[in-house]
Image (cartoon, one colour):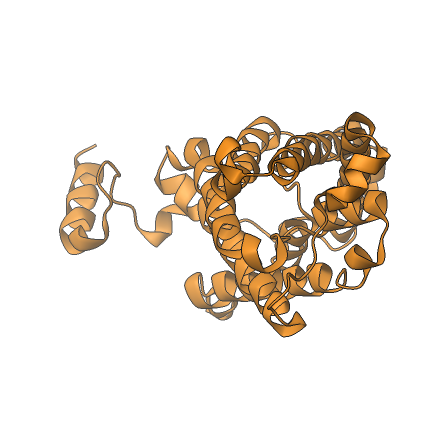
Length: 287
């Protein structure tokens, strides 16, 4: 016990400026980097937990689209924004739902609810390709169903008049503007996901896993505040696809590629930045 106490004191003194309040000193020797997930894991297909996780992603994305698109509909149908929650309310709906749904599903599927997040984690070898593809399919199906239920409530005429909550580049902005907004917005989201779920931080700070949904939801909220005027804010290909399929007009389909290419580029950049620059994992492997 004495030796351990001395090690803690030494670590606290040596790295005092790096220790967050309320955390214990810990050296790299106390932490073991988890092995990368295999690219293909055939055994997953025989496991109920694999399908349970996919169902959780479907249901979470369904609820996400249902609440958020209904919120967008409510704001869009009003003649004056003063009688609605406005852009801030839309942003809170998206961010709040991500916070709640990540909290509910993190222990089952990881709480991705977004193909871009799944793609970023795949590049970082946090899950297998088999699971990643399955998640993306279930997320897209959930989004389509969620948007479809909203159309059922609003009625076809009203839904089409309000443009179905679909994403498109707004007047006054170019497609390049929209693509850039999606890249940067998704980078912020996926970088937050990596930071909030970092295994090394979880090992050092016991409160990190509990609080992880909060910064992720807050990142979604902030990105929506910034980019709703540009693209309506995608940063989630399933959200954009679900709304586009149910709306099914050229307005949504003409810019649909932006809401896949942008988020996937942003997610890839976030994965590279976190894994190589922040965590320097390739360099540790060489060492």
